[in-house]
Image (cartoon, rainbow, N blue to C red):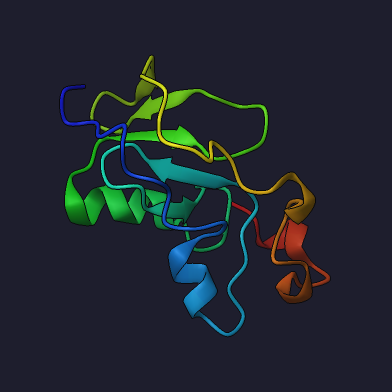
Length: 113
């Protein structure tokens, strides 16, 4: 885990790619432990956190959900233990999930993976 940078803050309060889409939304968020990129989880329609791993090779991510601090190692496909990352350690609790609320479709549960 020597490639983890504990000084880099997260890229923002939501999935970078979903926020760039006019109708992008997510269920849960994941934070790259190497560069701080925030992407949506594999249950979300676009699965941007895994896409980030595939395009960059950044193998470690941490949950970006309130109250969760687990890490995932994409290369080994297993949970991992990692260091404390730069704050904030989660999306704003007031944001809720799924989010952003104004983009979540009525049939969001049918769109999950």
